[in-house]
Image (cartoon, rainbow over all chains, first blue to last red; front, side, top):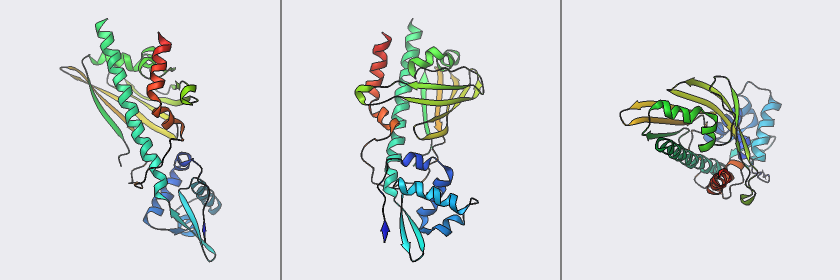
Length: 110
Length: 146
């Protein structure tokens, strides 16, 4: 049974925490159970679950029940927004630096 | 995917003059945003990205801290806003015969793996939304200054 959650557009909050980024890295290799994920972290099991919950709510992972275990699966397409967003930053700085150059050329003329 | 944005700009001005544009709060406001910058390591400041109701953008505050300030060679500050936490923006000024080569870097996007190929539609996020509307924001700024 696959449990999906309505993806909240909160991918960025979700990836803002280093532990959650590491969880995504782990899931990039393969699907993993909560226990397998928790085994990679020093933090308590409830803390791991809480992070996974945030990833679930952001639509970055899905959860699948295998008997008594839950397995997590990375939804890589959700990260497309992040890539787009970085490209936006790139444009942003192009624009700012252009403004800086304009400002400086104006100053040298005056 | 790269996790660092790097740019080089050649400016026909000596580093001292470029340094002023980078570190004088009023000048910084002209090409960046209104701010309370001070050229002092450890100084906390913000950039206030103004709201633009036309673009349905409610404004944004960028939280920064001066990390390095070595006139007229190196300026670096942290940058936290719109989903970024403690990224690092730096400007390194290199004196060259034509003036100054400005080495710009925005580092600390801790996203070094290739992501999925399908991009999500819609720029729901504050910063992306603002960037999409940047021309409007910028021209709004220019107009308000006149």
